[in-house]
Image (cartoon, rainbow, N blue to C red):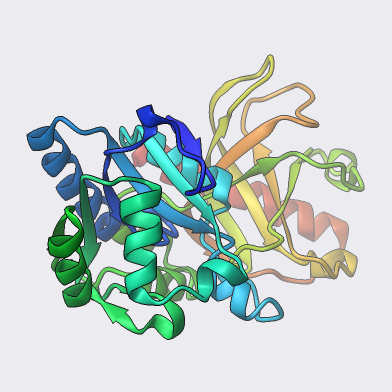
Length: 312
């Protein structure tokens, strides 16, 4: 997959794609349906499959001080899109110049003249241009005038209602990772490098791989059964485990992070890139009367996590 970040300088080989447009936070089933429509349109026109998205997320650009809301980082999003067969990722820099374009100027300068797109697929609720003034109907009109096809995808409904990033955030906030996974079409994952910690877990017999969740929407704090993929290094592979997500109140922690204990594992993971899937919420964070009680609870957490993961 090729990543293109500037619509003003595009190689000839990267023009003429059939693209799905959106923010694709989480790359959930609704997003995947839009991408599938772009894939079909591309096959009919012999055009590569592309996704057009923005970095930073427009919501993040306009409200940088707002609480973290993203379900995944840009890197994790790119990895997920590549797994779906996307050949061109147009990850455009969302800045003052781009945000100031009128809907017509966006269609002409970015989609038509800049990227030379063959076909565009958007969701029925798609809005674009300065002040989000343009909608899907406007895009169809511009496409007819400028020479690119437009397909408008209906919004996807799931068992929990409309499939959306907002609904997925809500499920995660309430400790319902399986409901989130039903809308995502995959487990919700936290990706990133293993960072140095206080090594307290090692002293307690539960060495953990510590990861930052900075910039991400925080799922409900507590202990989870997790599936882990070590993405690189000598220990590359898939593992089961248990993880604590939160501020570690037993040790007066303040900055939320993810601490993952890998079952039946021995080795150094510092600097390795992990992808940790939240499979089941086990319990909230707690403060225990003693370290012995804390360790006993961790024993019970791991035993329960093993049962859940082996059965799934």
